[in-house]
Image (cartoon, rainbow, N blue to C red; front, top):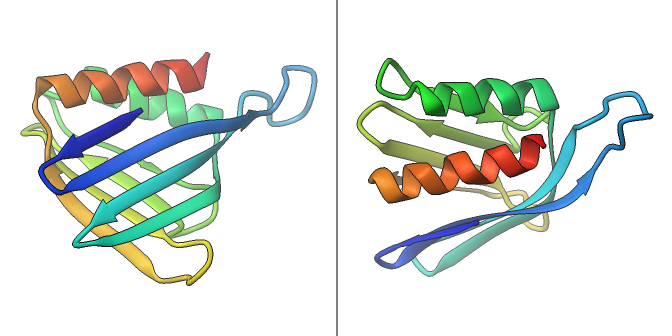
Length: 124
């Protein structure tokens, strides 16, 4: 999933999923890219736990009631927060430089639906 708004973009790519027969089944390794102010942050070693993915997905579906947040297993490596008005904050630690890249977006219904679709795919 890639969302572009003006001169910025945010992208999530699924890299690996833990098979059902193993502990931590359903946990997902993703690559996240973030481009803002002519600077790209990228991390291809972000793990999300399946219960957190499902919780975030439900929060996104019920977004008009509150906000939705998901974070990587490793603290501060990746955070995604969306509020009920579509204000979205993405923070990412670049895997090479270890420098944080973050930005804010104003997501409309199209971008919100793209996120929901992405996380449905990650949870299945």
